[in-house]
Length: 376
Image (cartoon, rainbow, N blue to C red; front, side, top):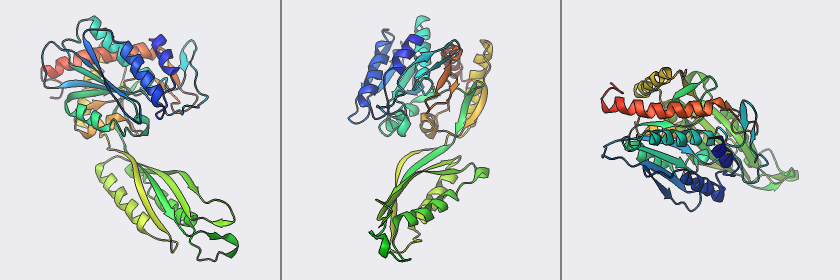
């Protein structure tokens, strides 16, 4: 398992590095040499290719089990964080838990099921996504389609530090706001200057005022840009803004506020517009998700593993699956922390543990589903 993990981590697969992500898909394909599965590449022009691995069942089923994980990382192609290191209890490297470790755990779970001749009896489809870190623009439709054909789903993002499994997540909305003013020489600018940056400053304060921790709404203006120099009235300014929310009604309220703030003109002769960059629906901690978690928890207990339930603020492709009303739990990957940073690490003992748990949960939950016991 760690040999495969090292190979994966040493492939630079930042989202925009199509060549690297495609190498990941080829490496994963090479790990499946069984007649019990088939591999399908979904070719992409801009981003990396997606990969689907499906079990070849002896009989036909109306529904399947969906596994989901992504091959891309947040680190750009020229990142100096391009190494893999192991110590006695931890290993380190780009994507080691976000989420190449989860991919390894899922691959070996399928190998274990195949070894027990179960892949020909359980309909499993593993979707390997190439662009999750930027909102899954080219994979979203594929994931939603597979979710619609699934009885339930497991997503292999990193597990919580104390073994938590995710039953709910916030939704998110990411946008770019652009302001246009009128350029001019700073020496001759009056108090009525049409500065795009000053207009943006008003809007930043307005957007940040939408934060409402009591409702679970968070807003963050995370990147700004504008102007060409201190002696010029800026004609252009822009900002990228992230919104997180817990419910569909919250999203509707935010969308209304976004439109109102954008239309309001604090500085005369300026204009504003925004574009949505990415969006994922909220993943409510639904009754169905909780029943799926309870079934997995029973499996975990039976093999001596302790798991608990968690609501997580971050988003993943589990949000897309939940948006199709498919029961889903997330955080089934190995345990670690500091993802999206050069301090990213995995607790090594959790890799095998989570792979065993996933293999057993696939078997147990499918049996319960077939008997009508999983969601009763």
